[in-house]
Length: 336
Image (cartoon, rainbow, N blue to C red):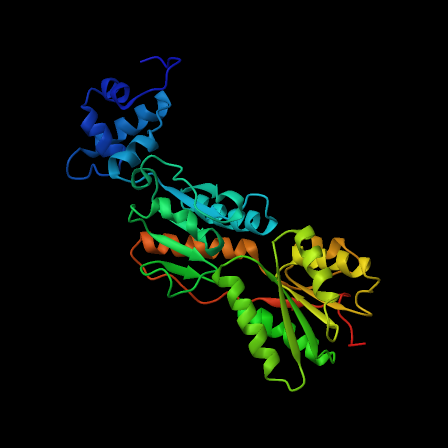
């Protein structure tokens, strides 16, 4: 049979060899032994190669009840951190023949409409950040394997969790600032009701209250630079002792804190030490460069995908927290 302009089918292969389509399916699915002779199997493989036949994997997966597609739910596509998470997850998925659909929760948090008419038919599993957990409400009717990132291990029964060791990151920040002699702290907290930010606040408070003579004030801000600037200005001009150290829930908030300090005539770090958390590109783009906790976003995504693949294979995934480490730069100095 001459090769045409249309894609060859298993029927074309069967006609070329003079066997049934069922026999072709058995050979190309490597299930022919004991059903088809070795000579016939070789003829089928040779005909398929000569015709340029490629199996329709999508149709095959649908027949098997699998699409080899994973849904990754994140707070926002514009986040450098979650771009890294996607890269790590997609890399592992591709190594195992899976594709990844990236789905952002609108406004960064809050309910999101189901992107599929039937999630159960369209997906093999879901990976979701705790910051976008409300987006899963539309998918609750689909009993799919689920991995939660940056989430309370006890909050979602039946789901696996993969976490960065955020509590240790806050411990490292507190230890660093206390060692520099700081005793008056301001926590610039992200105004987002999620487990990860609650954990940061709790761990920071625990670390500081164990040292006599420390004070800790907390102000909340939207996860935006301008929101952080406004909140920081208000906190630094409030009555009472002015903080000498400002602990920010992430690097974007720290940038807003820098702007507030400069508007108030304060120098970083001479008058005010500032720390972040994430180690985004922004951390080294500002002056002075930001002391922050490095979070390996790509490794986070890889571990999340590895956990989901383990669930799909019926195994218990590794749920050991991923280590983080403090990178000391020029935004922190001894207390004035």
